[in-house]
Image (tube, rainbow, N blue to C red; front, side):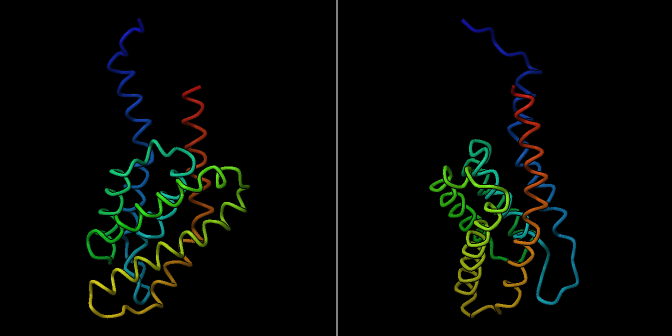
Length: 174
């Protein structure tokens, strides 16, 4: 029979499991800072999409559907999408990544970034389509294209930071 974990051990495990979520909250709150770019109301998708993509590949147990849903709600509250749109698109992204996880995990950093391009394009295009549908009017495409370019451009830096966090978690577990 294994001994029961102490309170500190359980808190430690919970803190490690919450790392992707806390990183998402921190980055999404920082993303609410207005950039002054026309038609762009913050960087919420530029942070939410890479976070879900990365952690869904490397530690999917740390980003279960409920966590992805919460990240989407926060992104909607801080961004411009109607409530629930980002949750739906991020859940679909997590499902697509999960279906291709083995292939994605074997890629180099450059290939992972290049594969992120179509995943992020699909996610943001679906966000645009759902937002347009819910608005009963097509939203302008330029802000979405700018958002996508920022998302793709920020991914390597975000992946580097998240990769460090992943290695830190692995070192603590090992």
